[in-house]
Amino acid sequence: MDVVLTGDGQVLISHEPWMDHRICRTPEGDSIDPAQERGFNIFRMTVEEAQRFDCGSAPQPDFPEQDLKPSAKPTLREVVEAVDEHALLTGSRLSSFNIEIKSEPALYGTFQPEPSSYVKAVLTSMDSLGIADRCILQSFDPAILEALHAADPSIPLAFLVEKSEGLEQDLGRLSFAPAIYSPAFEFANAALLAELRGRDMQLVVWTVNEEADIARMLDLGVDGIISDYPDRVIRMLDDR
Image (cartoon, rainbow, N blue to C red; front, side):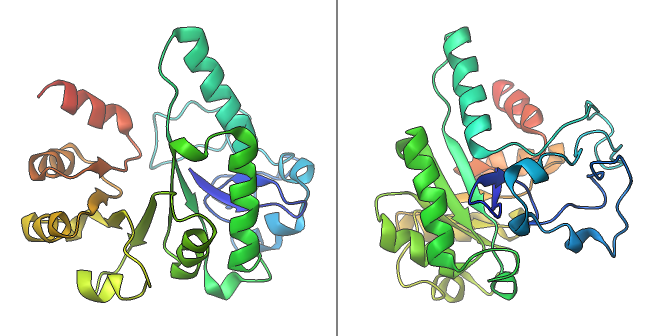
């Protein structure tokens, strides 16, 4: 789950700290022009204001199987409570959560708080929900990971990497060794996995959607797969 912060300090599930024109509609039901979307700044809205936007009805060409229906961006609390309730009603084990703190240095102070305040808000929300012991926190932003590590070294952290400069150079951006190295799946190979094993680190790859790529990652033996289609990953795991 990707999370951002609202203006009143609520942790909201969202890929961007604004209303994406491809996904969301205004409270009046109007489409959003690409040039306008950053004007709908979630960090300047209350959670009530943010949840007036419909982010579930617009057809998505990349995801034709989506169940289209009016939907608001949920808070982290709403997701956790719904997932845990489902587990209790079905007799399933409680789920763990992989939470990405969306952060870009260029957005500090405008679309998000500074890293220390940002991290404090997310950790406070996790503590209030009692899920700190079943969470992995991840980010592309080293400053966020540094703040998390300083606040609670016991939480497993994943360093997301989009444009790898090599493992040594990537990890050199942090003052500590994260539990998980998480590159785009194209960078994953046997040599990288062996090097991570030697460092006692896990390899979690993203975003693996095509079955041939999923199969290659499973054959490689990665520790985790992030996918828009977890059903495909689960089915292929079950078939092995």
